[in-house]
Amino acid sequence: MTVFRRGSIVLASLAALVVAACGGGSSSGGSSSAASPTPKAETTVKTASKTVAGKSETILVDAKGITLYYFLSDKGGTVTCTAACLQAWPPLLLPSGTTSPTGASGVTGKLATVSNPAGAQVSYNGWPLYYYAKDKDDGDAYGQNVGGKWFVVPPDLASAT
Image (cartoon, helix red, strand yellow):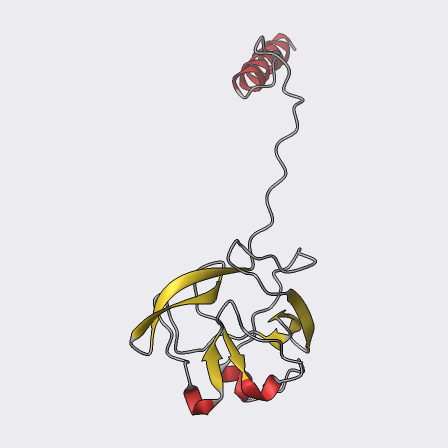
């Protein structure tokens, strides 16, 4: 039985060393009870300067800088891009865990959400906002004037209603 006790003592000593090494012991550095800062809500929409159809414009983009569009058929604030349309024009949905969209400085219109089967779609001055599937990075704005009905979103976009 002495071998068993010696083994237990060695294991207990090793466990104490591991706990101390991992910060389980007391520290003399003061209190660690200070709360960590609350993370800021991610901006949903911001402005960016982009070349659109050959000229520099200030337009609305998402938090990653991807161009946002509005659809003329959505006049009145009702989502009309559904089914196959969504393959080319996915909606800007409210990020999970957020209750309302937020805008950076320069976003002077009203941000809200409209009903969409995929989730809460972000709207700007009543216009539901979309991406264009061919836009792959923050420099793209290939959806401008597609079909004469899709346009980049200027900060001064008139109300949809």
